[in-house]
Length: 369
Image 1: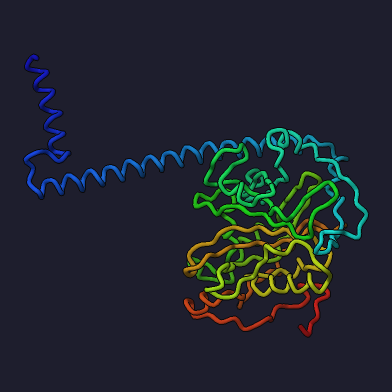
Image 2: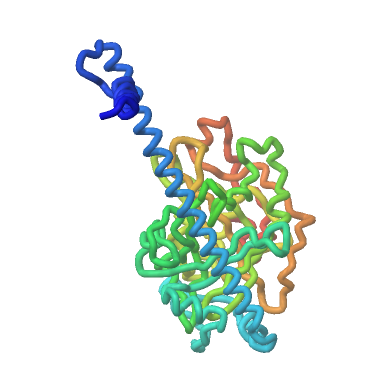
């Protein structure tokens, strides 16, 4: 072995002896090396996880963008006549709790723009869009899935790959078929910190810690509608409520909004919507609700308002036949006293003062209730 090789070996040996516990090391030196190695291992693992998640998110975002471009291109290529047939075929939903409707059942064809998506994944059920501040940049724009298992798309994407962001999916109890759909369609999605999927849905919340002015509902005013297309029809839904909800009885009352899919009659519908209006953080007189309206519910997780499991939920009702899809937001206003839950009351010195909203928001509601 020549002198340069011995010198090279000595360098590596010296580095190893500096970093790794070595025979003859003092106890303090051994402890220092163990702490360093532990910290280095944690850093490497953390960086690996971060890089893996970042790459996965980049691939997922790219895939979602490709799907959106394809879907909207195909939708734009559908003839005006075909669009008119499907967009205007919406009728008030009078389904009962059993899901049976008094309306004659007509088997609807699949919209053309969904056929390529169905070929890639037959569990495709729809497409959800909330337009952003720029007409060319949708704020939420994703394919929607449905299976018989509400857990499947919590951690699986459209391509069937494991994904922390999962996919948007309709509640398995809300069967959407060629013959029809339930009176209330519930769609779930993850509240991603990076903003994807339903990560921006809580922007509708005007009681946030960072928002000093609880009367500021400017976000709702710039995003008052939702476009949701099932396989069989395209509709505009007008947002009429948004709220933060508790899901654990230990923290107070639990409003099980996700359990209501159809209604047994007008009183059942009215009381359900009244419970929603109690909790909504804003109202808009231009978007009232009445029995027979088809509802859309968007649900995601919420964080940071007491040690309990929270949801943030947005409620909308379908544009009625002959009604303009446009929303007048000039009269919209914040609810000065929305209903929350016991833990919120105790931690934030808050008290609900009872049902005081304008009864005209719910057409046909008993004003004595």
